[in-house]
Image (cartoon, rainbow, N blue to C red; front, side, top):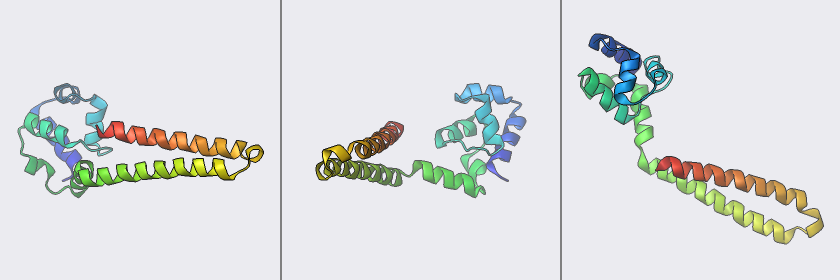
Amino acid sequence: MEIGEKLKSARADSGLTQERVAEEIGVSRQTISNWENEKSYPDIVSVIKLSDLYSISLDELLKGDRKMIEHLEESTNVVKSNQKLIGAIIINIILVIALVMMNVLIPEPENGYFLAGVFSLMVISASVLLYQIIKKF
């Protein structure tokens, strides 16, 4: 049995509505529906809250659902997350160096549009990096 089916069954056995469960664990009713229909998966904190709310063990809730286990491994893998962040920082540094080098190598009259494009790419890249840093914390 998959996690969605287990969550739906446990909620029904507990006599709770999706709205009530959502209030108890601090998410929207739509989020509960998405979990039960396996459109998305709960994070580990929500899984623990659901386990407590439904009075079922984490083992019973999680065992047998390979996709859910993979999701939890991916979302809690700090080393992999740090590697992605370091990679993004390195790419941003390379882009800054490339921007400076292109400004030096390309003569002034010819580099206006090209540098504007590279600068735009740099701003987008820096924004993605900032988003990743904020998301990490």
